[in-house]
Length: 314
Image (tube, rainbow, N blue to C red):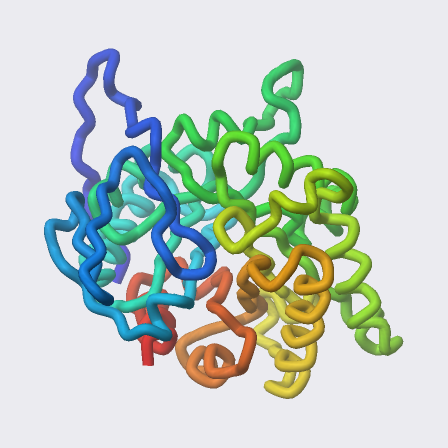
C-alpha cells in the first residue's frame, strides 16, 4: 500500500536536482534503445546490462516485441507519496518481463528518475511544448523533460485535446519536438462516445493518425524506436467502462494497418488505454496488436500496476 513513507532527503547543495543527461530509452518494439548510460551485451537471447549487473533471458518472440506498461499519474502525487510509489514499483519490477514506464507530474520527473535510476523502470512526462524555449508561462519543453531524466513523453491525451483544445497539428508539432531531443513520443488517439455512436470510430482514428504524426519529409522519422500510439476511447477513460474485446481488436487492427501504410511495417507499437485494470488486463493484453497499456488510475497503486505488468508477461 502506498502511504506516507518518507522519501530519502536529497543533499542540499548545487547538485540536488542533477540527473543523468542520457536517460534510459526503451524502444517501443521492446528492444532497449541506444543510451550512453547503458552498455548492452547480447549473448544469443540473453541481455546483460551494466546498470542491473544481471542477465535477463527472453524468448525470441519476446525479444522482438516486449509489451510496454506505462503509468500516467496525471495530476496526482506529492513528493513523498510519489517517491514511495516509485520505490514500490521499482522493487517489484524485476519479476516482470515487460517494459515499465512511469509518467508523473512534471514537478516529480527528476525525483522519480533518481528513484528509478539503475532499474528496469523508465520515466517520462505527461506533455511538452513544441517550442525549444521562450515566453510560454507554465509550459515545459522537450529538452527540459530530457534534462530532468525523462525518456518518454505523453502527447495528445484526450484530457488535453478535449479539455484544453489541442489540435492534431499541435500534437504533431510536439511529436517533432520530442523526437528532436531523443524522447519517445506516446501519441494518444481515440474517439468520443458520440463519435462511436455515429459509427465514426475508424474514421476518427485515421484522421488523428494522419494529423498527429509528423508528415511530409518527417514521415521517415516515425518508427518503432521513437513513437508509441496509445488508443484510448475517450468515453472509457476513468469511467470504469471498456469497449468489448472485439471493439478493441477492430480498432487496433485498423491502427496497425494504417500505420503500415503511413510509416511502414517498422511503425510504432500500439498500446491500449481506457480503464485497464488487473481484472481485465489479461484479456485486453492478449488481443492481437495490443502491445501494452497506458494506465491511469490503476497506476497509482503499486500492487495494481504490477499486477497489470504481470498480466502482460503471461
